[in-house]
Length: 160
Image (cartoon, rainbow, N blue to C red):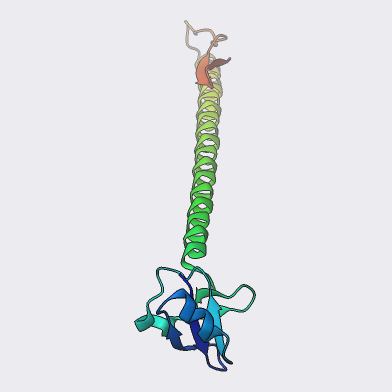
């Protein structure tokens, strides 16, 4: 449906002719009036203060956004889609961070087990030396095959 609107100097709608297409076309031929073809069904005369006419294409647009309701909907859907994609990227980054932290924790555990193994060997060696120094008759041998085993990423790591 065609309507004619009258705009003041600030592009506020201050008059509307929406009686019929012929009346709107005739009204638009007068100074200050603009013909709007295919007027937006969301446009209400009682809320005309929320609207203006875009100069580039003579479409009714909301003053707050400069967009038609259809354009606003498309922009909102686009923003939601971008937000969802950003959310998915954040999820992937989070998963990668957790994986890195888990691998580091496994490596730290392996390093700690290897340190305990080394300390155990040193304590056993010192015990043997202390027993020899104190003249103990049956001195145990220093262990040579002390092993520590840990699993990381499905692989078994053994330290001696």
